[in-house]
Length: 193
View (tube, rainbow, N blue to C red):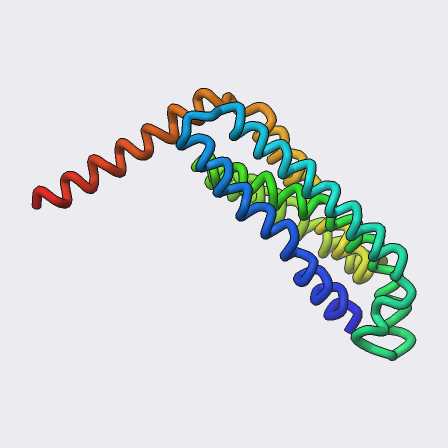
């Protein structure tokens, strides 16, 4: 029941970084399409900062209400207590989740979604899942599952932010136009048939 409470809350709260990521994808893609490497870089970095700020606000709200939060969903004392114990991990999760959402949006806007997919795949299946399961069944319980998730998501967020920060934006502009040229060539070939 406590896991249901924290997962429901996390899914609702995930709409914030998801929205930032979607907006970032469009903004970065549009800036690259206008050959505005400075604007694309600014959009990517601003969204990363914005997502960390929003994650911090959500963290503060969750931590400030952690003793009462589960009562919205359930009035069983054991569920409320376990939720209050796990909620700090869920709260910490929000900063990394925001960073992952915004940097993932930047990578999609650059046409580099395969990079984000690879980082997520390795971090979750090689890191979070084994760590979380091991911790859960070696004395940490539900908190262990969330420690594994937090560890992986901070790793994903940090790696994606580094990748975005180290991007060569003039190269990204060139790649965007190469992708458009290939698309136009494919359309021209389909019209000739």
